[in-house]
Length: 199
Image 1 (cartoon, rainbow, N blue to C red):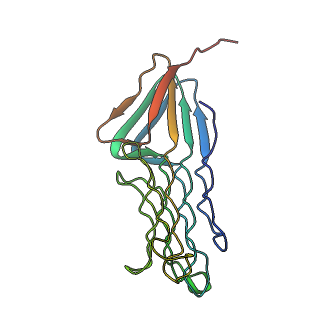
Image 2 (cartoon, helix red, strand yellow):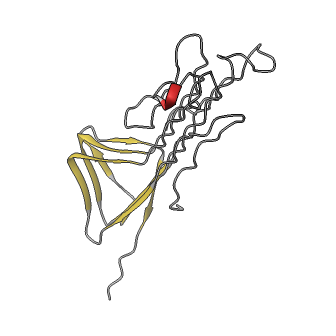
């Protein structure tokens, strides 16, 4: 699996410039074992998009894509309800006021919950951003300006889309990984084998 972080969110003219950051990429390697037990989280989720800070509604920007997690050891165990790996996509930014850069209409970061990261929304009169992707659900697009032509109203400039989930890879001696006692993996994962070489 290429160890590559998620892409940043897109932006649309004439405004959107504060985009969701892509999730990072991390590799952990051990020659003996990797155990994450009781409490421990690795979160490579993407960031949420937002609307441009202006005094009127502007286009929402896209969320950031989920990143990558690569764990390699002869054996790997994830154990406990407070243990999790996540690489979900961020929610898109909604159309919103965002006066002076205040935190309005920001999409949710990917996060560790099972549910998709929600797109941002200022209030019911404004457009809501698309939701981010998870292992079970794909991302949703941000809505366009609808009947507004040419997208000139203060509430209908278009909203940013949610972005896809990242990837997780486990490489162990026998391709198996123990995910037990309520531990969670919030991204699609695959497994492979490793070969230990003696000096």
